[in-house]
Image 1 (tube, helix red, strand yellow):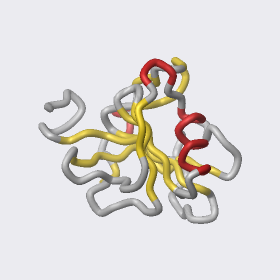
Image 2 (cartoon, rainbow, N blue to C red):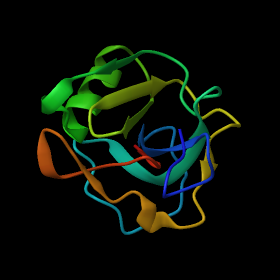
Image 3 (cartoon, one colour):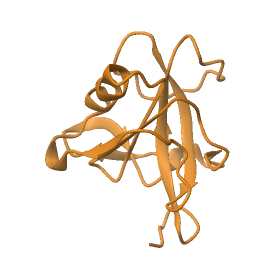
Length: 126
């Protein structure tokens, strides 16, 4: 699937991580939805090689960043990312296929559950 935000076949990810694993630079991101989680930036990945390998789920019209982070934390993952307004991805580490997006503004679309939570074709990773 081609994206107006990246190369054909690439998606993006909003990435969050649990704070004791993160040494990422400070950005001007959305607020982390839960305590001890920090924003790590907007990342790209390939639909055939995900940036986060672990559990994932889709919540239809109810997805929020907090919901995704909570799901990943409860399942003992250190990274959580939202994508396509309704998808949540978890991982214990960021895979090499996850690359920091050259244009951080591509993580700019609201999750289905709230207009204030960032999700995107480029994933923002917490």
